[in-house]
Length: 74
Image 1 (cartoon, rainbow, N blue to C red):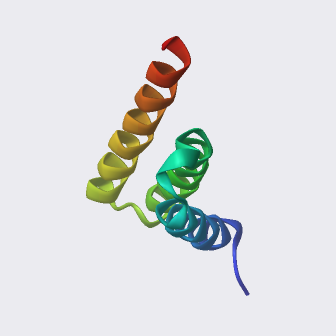
Image 2 (spheres, rainbow, N blue to C red; image 1 turned 90 degrees about the horizontal axis):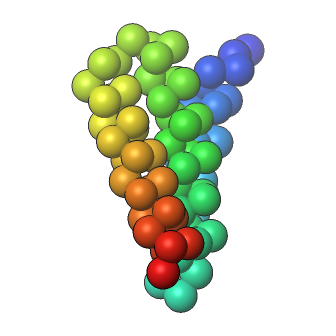
């Protein structure tokens, strides 16, 4: 049976892959997808206790948030 953390991991992976496939003109949407996907993968990484991947995902989410905030300011 698929537990909630594995489901979040799969969903996060699908979201990030779809974000990569979105064209550059939809940067705001792409950032939102990256943020949600990154949060889901962070939860999964915490579940599997992979601290390197947790760190990577936190940085990934922070960078996407920074880009989104920067776009809103300009």
